Image (cartoon, rainbow, N blue to C red):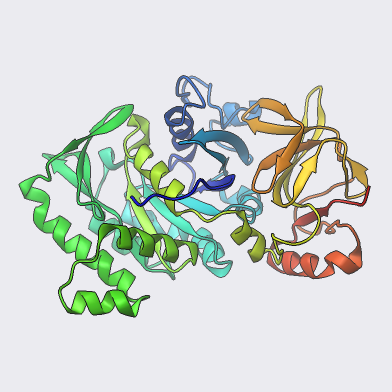
Length: 399
């Protein structure tokens, strides 16, 4: 992939139907990034994501779980969102502050309709998103059929980024359609680079051509190259993919089996190279990230034993400092959160997701009044945000 400058803190929401594997994906992301030493499991009840007593009792996510990690020198926050339809508002709140969403699905064509509400929400609000087809080791249909079913509920074109390598009835690896490199899965470890199997060369060539044609729909220069049978450089293809994801024109599709850790590192690398920074999320909420005082978006509130109320925010611009005035109150602690672990910070910069302590009057969810530095100054911001999801905007007050 092309070289790029280090990005600021970014945020990815993991979404999808109940039992699709979102929380297991989070466990593998945290392990692959070095944030944890071992992967938790639902059976053992030691997941970082589902850390609450209710989640462990029900063996399912009952609220948005926040986890921080650093991957290849860059800061990330992952929001593991509940899949139950009864808790969909929790997921919508989280999506509004995310830079990108990873929609985790099972390889079962008949279940494609279950993700229609999520895709509709993402498409209407122009939130960049990827699809991760999980559980390929238990696939009941070819990836092509799964993709066709998913396309029926997506307004955006789905762009396959990988084709599976199949040996017998087992998926043993994948071919990356941009780099044209093949990899063999190693459970819990980075995949091994291998030669593209002869049996996969025709399907890889056909799938790659479809990927290029999908990108050419948005670029006349690329279309001309394809009509002239000119193969664009690999770096140019990555640049087109990045641009079109960030503008929410396409939906890249990745695959793997997170129970075995397969496909997780490839997904992480794609997120690292292609996810936009916080200014894009801020713009969707009507916020100019380059001008004005510190501004944060509230998306979750939680009462923690012995700690009291925590208000979870994404910093859209500026810098928050412990003790500063926000929304008529003083910040009583800034915390970087990973599951049930809270690390206190003196400050939080734009892009970070943090929990603020003792913000008792701050509300979140439908119907909450946006709170800012002043109605006149933040009125436009409040209206733009409220039209989308009624979120709470918190502006820093003058010292």
